[in-house]
Amino acid sequence: MSSRAGDKAVDPWSQLIATESDEQQQQETAIVYRRKPPQNETLPTTKRASSIRKNNRVSLAPGKRISWNRSLFTRGRTSIAVAVCDNYVPGKEKPTRKNRPPLARAKGVGVPPQNYEKERAYFQEVDAFELLEESPSPQNKTWVMGTKQCVLPSHISTVLNKWLQNRSRGPSASLSKILETPQLTGDSVGVLDFSSQKKCSSSFIGSSSANRIEEIETTAEDLGFAIRNLSLSSQDSGLDERWDPLLDLLKVCGQSSPSAFSDVLSQYCDLQSIAKVGEGTYGEVFIAGGTVCKVVPFDGDSLVNGEVQKKAEELLEEVMLSLTLNDLRGNDTHIRNVCPTFIQTLSLRVCDGVYDDAMIRAWEEWDKKHFSENDHPTEFAEKQRFVVFVQEHGGRDLESFVLLNFNEARSLLVQVTGALAVAEAAFEFEHRDLHWGNILLSRKGSETLDFILDGKKMHVKTYGLVASIIDFTLSRINTGESILFLDLSLDPALFEGPKGDIQSETYRKMKQVTEDCWEGSFPKTNVLWLQYLVDILLQKKDYDRTSRDERELRSFKKRLNGYKSAKESVVDSFFSDLIVVSDA
Image (tube, rainbow, N blue to C red; front, side):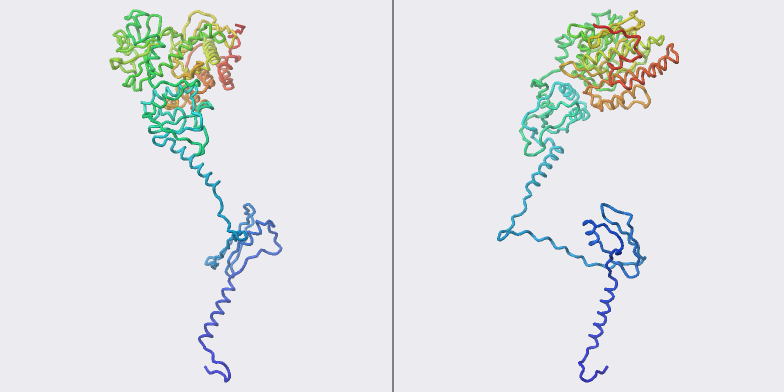
């Protein structure tokens, strides 16, 4: 291509490149828009909304349609939905870099770095607390919370004793399970503060700050040894690590050493007249003259009917509980609360050795008639130990006893309710296992029985029927010096009975009431067993009754829902014509 004269020479390649650059710049400029809201549209005027509108931009290609969705608002933010054609590829915006705010500068002096000591101290405190929760017992160390070494109140002694006697049974009987505290492992033990004495809610008391946790050395080689050295009473009286529950059991029974069966039973009858009349998982029941002897093995290594044998500590508690209930028959120290319904314990003896020949003969005769589910007594070791409860003869159990009429059914209920009410008032007593095998009945011709409840004498009409309550294995009682109870949370199978079964449902209701905390006082459990007895009288027992009688029983059971204790239940209108109250 030629050029005019006088014009500067033009490079055609430069012209071509310049032209393409101009076209590309025009194209890029044409496809980038800033989306602004219509002028006539009202938008939020808050600073927060203005900031959002300023920063929220949408890059669009020409010809693309936009739809605004104003129905969605979250804390002042406007949600925008953009609907575009299928092949839309948004243009890429160059990321804008936000400048950091300038650092404050003092004149001529450099600003010191920010101080994070408060934050550091806070997180150290949190970390220390989490470390304590996750690993409460570092090797060869013991945690002491606060400045006061704790003292366990008297009611904890029973719990610790139960743990000590159950240690050999395995992990299910751990101290952490019984006391509901973090489990302690290794060769160390947590020293606990029970100053709050909250029922079944023991925990480490003290500051969670690492600065307030003092570490002390311990030389205890065994957890049980350390527990025995803890103070178990508010008087700082420690439990001697050499404490032998067998010696205490012998002392309570008035013995210096175990006796032979023949020496004990011969005091009540001719040995050849002994007869077995019942059995349970943990023992056998024999008739010896006019008394009933319950024989319970303990402290042996072998299983009894598939179960681990009871320990001396457990038998000691049951012995103490039986003797405490004996006081309700009336003496100089218990005159405000008296009742004759709890079975009287006449004597207690510790025996060792094999069953007497007369006892084996009685056992085998029972087996022929009733097909015993228990192991043959000859399977016991030669040095096996037993406790013999010698009690009065209370008659036949409710399961096998034949009630005659509705009046006898009411007599049964009023005597049991009155006895539970008196025991509640005197000792915070709860039976916790009052099924129809643990109520004995007899006809002794007595038309009335005398009870005293909180100083008020009650003359109870019996219609010739006398009831006796037995078996306090699962019971809970406050003797004034200690709380005796059995931690049923260690026996989950107790609450796994058949659905719909009256007795099994009652156990589960007890667990709900106590929240699986069996040390505390929950007199509502007595009410649950009264409802159980009403169900038994309605569903399991045959006697002369009318439809009106059944309606009265159902109404009584319904009213029991509103009572919190047997003491409240005994004043129900169902018993109004059976109880006459007067001053003692």
